[in-house]
Length: 218
Image (spheres, one colour):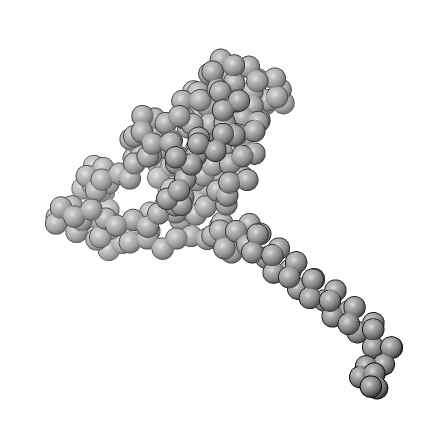
C-alpha cells in the first residue's frame, strides 16, 4: 500500500503536538492566574453605591476616626456598617437639603437601612476576623490601602490567598504598634525588621499557626 503522507510531513506532526501542548499550557496558565488580574479582582475599581460616600472628605477633610463609623472593628469579626443614625448625627444639622443625601434622609424617615454594596467581599469559605488583626497590630491601611484618599471606596489589594499568606508567613514586616493601627499616615521605620519581630513577641502572635489551613478555612 502506498504511503499516505510523505516522510517530509513528520515535522508537521511534531509541530502540531507541540502546538497542542502549548495551547493546553496556556489555558491552564490563564485559569490558574485569572484571579491575579486586577480587572477580575476589581482592584482599583470603585463600586457603585446608593450614596456617593467619600472617605477622603470625611477622614482627611473632616478628621473623623475610622472607629466613629466602624464601631465594632476592635471587638468583632466585622468592622460594622454604620447605621443611618450615625450619618444623621451630622447631617441633621449640615447639608440638610442636599439632593445627594436624600437616600440617607429617606432611610432615616422610613427606618429602612441603606443597602450598601460590599467592596471587600471574601468568599463564603474564607473566615476573617477584624478584631484579631487590629489587636495584634495590623493597620487598616495594610489591607484597605489609603482609604483616607479615596473619594469612592475601592479595593487596594486582590485579597487572594497568596496575598494573605505573604503576611501570615512573615507578619513582622507589616505589624505596627497598636496605637498606630488607625493612623492612615503611618510609615514603617527603617528598623521595621527588628521592631516587627519585637512586636510579634510582645503581642504573642502565634506565627507557627498562621499558615495552618484551619485559620482561614473553617
